[in-house]
Amino acid sequence: MDNGEKLNHFDRRGNAIMVDVSEKDITRRFAAAEGTIKVNEKVMEAILDNSAAKGDVLGAARIAGIMGTKKTSDLIPLCHIVPLGACTLDFETDRETLSIRAICTAKTDGKTGVEMEALTGVSIALLTIYDMCKAMDRGMMISDIRLLEKSGGRSGHYRAD
Image 1 (cartoon, helix red, strand yellow):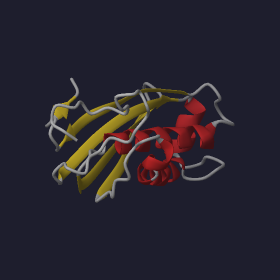
Image 2 (cartoon, rainbow, N blue to C red; image 1 turned 45 degrees about the horizontal axis):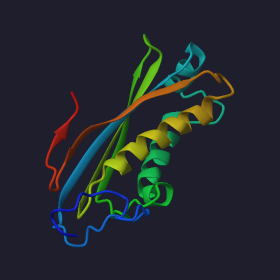
Image 3 (cartoon, helix red, strand yellow; image 1 turned 135 degrees about the horizontal axis):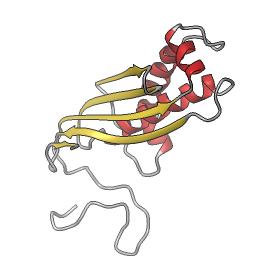
């Protein structure tokens, strides 16, 4: 890739391509993403009391989200396979707003970033909560999925406002 060429997923003829990162330097890469699911009182109590019929909702969602980060390149077309060095998935529950916030971090030493991995982890975790609790609340709403922070690589550091 020459330095004057913009990174995108199309060649000069408009064909979809995987971005060539072969000439890029290996750097430490980090990304954090978040998202929220709004639930009803019954779901919140079942999650907090660990009494949901399908079992430990947040435990299963944590594992699913981490697995999702590892499968990102299988799910997102043209996404590079990234060997993750670390991944975390945590939850913050709020009884007052009946919401659960998922936060996923991903790290690697590589030639491309891990933003898509963190965003995928959050998405899969929230979808797992929905799946495990849909019998109690089909009106759950997943929202506000976004990149919180990324570092490493040529574009440098980014932090959401």
